Amino acid sequence: MSEKQQPYKSGPARTQNNVVVLPMIRTDRPTPRPVVNPDGVSIKGCSYIYASKGQAGEYAELTANPYRGCGHACAYCYVPLVTKQDRKEFNAGAVERRRFEHGFLRDAAKYKAAGITAQVLLTFTSDPYHPGDTALTRWTLEQLIGHGLAVCTLTKGGTRALRDLDLFRPGRDAFASTLTTLDDRFSQKWERHAALPGDRLLALRQFHNAGIFTWVSLEPTLDVEASIAIVKATSGYVDLYKIGRANYLKEITRTTDWRDYTLRILDVLQGVGARHYIKKDLQPFLPAGYPNPLRVPQHH
Image (cartoon, rainbow, N blue to C red; front, side, top):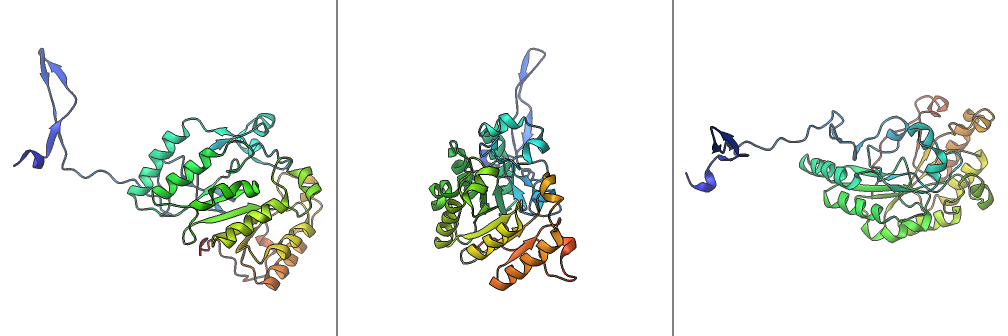
């Protein structure tokens, strides 16, 4: 057998009776493949690219969160509460998660080895286009694409996202924006440092014109009339709407007729022929048998 064909190689050296011994390790055994979760789209043990759960799971199968903190300073943001971060520190700005690049590349290699090509959403615990330096967002997108995965960004950063438009592929990827209003003053009250609504609409149109699948998150719903107006104004360049209610905001949750809202917005969505998904919080108000698929292909 030639040297190239030998099924053994020398392992780490050790000393036995003052003699250096090189143990032999088999090299003809196959490299273990990553263990895939029953959902078929995620890898067990991965924490940097992972299966979305709970309300986040209604938005995407996989997600990655490069940042800690944000900087948009949205009054309704649930992340500091859920992750037990100081809100003032969280609102001060986004910083890279500790050892993110190392852990992320390790996870990405496992997904590539398992042949998983699903779409990964950035991000549920921050914003990929926050007001600070977003070079890490572009690096993360490039690495996902390089490892065979598809990408989606969910942002209130508006046209800040256009710097990465060249990376998005019509047949694989998606661009999404959270919208709560079309009114600048209302937005500035609730989303202090986020891009103004008109700037977010411009970004959606630009991605749409480039052939990229676009969708809008109508969550939280802070004002029923505002959400209805958004659908009417954007249906020409938005491919999908995901509709939820307000959470953690007692002054809104207790005073809104969520059944009436659900039925009204369904009428508007159907009237403009817009695809949509109604989140679990509003599903009790859907008409019996109403088609509401959780997953639709988020690409053209």
